[in-house]
Length: 130
Image 1 (cartoon, rainbow, N blue to C red):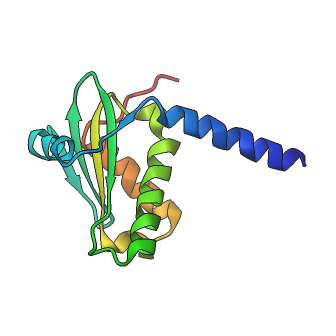
Image 2: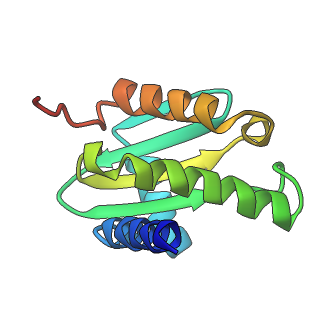
């Protein structure tokens, strides 16, 4: 029972952390980030569009190239999980993460490594002092 409570507590903490960011909802908002992105970075698994600014917005995209609805939703869940896991390290601004078909074929750790590298290359990652 203790492990279940701890798991639910961690889940609630992660959900509250993503609430710092508002979701990009309309195509106009997505297009604004695509066109005005200050940094764009491609990996075999994902594409990150980053526009620096004071606002905190995020959007996750998986096109039909990924597969059926089940595959697209899984791809967006994976991107969302990596974003939430590393939310403390991202700078404020607008983010659009676009899934690529190879995303579903790789392990969680391989995707995490590519995601962190992408944040670093886009200068979207904050430097934390230890």
